[in-house]
Length: 345
Ligand SMILES: [Zn+2]
Image (tube, helix red, strand yellow):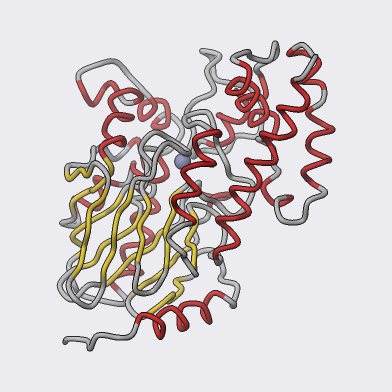
């Protein structure tokens, strides 16, 4: 069946009304006609959020998730449409967003990503390119869904922008610069004013910063905010509106501000000792308190390193953040035998 062209304002208004209702984890939400959002279970399964758009002839899925996350999503898409799932867009290379690629390929889809995702995979997944074990092999030790699948790199790549447009729906995949990684892509629906961000924007204490650059992240979020999104589907945490993008950016701006101030006239150990005070200061800001989690000390360490070029003497907080942010969630607090904390989400 075909759909009439609908005025952009109507679609955007419909989208906004949906956002007002708080969704449950694992529940499919209709964000706008043919546009869906699904909040993944990050705490229990390490899953990311997904979005999908039902075009006239095919379905485009936003994020491949872990293999188990992909297998959870596919029946939920199938319950809504029998159209073929043609494309799975990896917003970045992390396991909970890209390790499900093979599952989508088996379903007939093609993994699509910014060129930086392939570059990141060459760096972190050497086994795929004839080298030794990398993050996939490390994760496979702890996740059966990874162990029983295989890593598949995206095979359709775009440098800055890729457009899907069938006259009814338009989805633009954009790269706006370094943020959470060096290959972050956004999915922008200009008619409905919906933006899917991957982990370049999250809605809760899920920022893993070690693979990106916080300073550049702030500027990349400027470009994302300039789109004028009314609905924001973050990489983790609940669906939101434009304030999620603004709050995410403010969290990093405030982090940079307090770390810059603390770094003046102090040595690295003294700055590290003031992490508790920084947490209290940022936690007093209602707009950004939800971004403070177990990874905060690691985020301070990364910001400090970017601002001063120096590292904290005790890097355990950063290692802990890395371990926590990977797909499997161990609570024993100990890094693996190699002293390396595994890989992040
Ligand atoms: Zn990530």
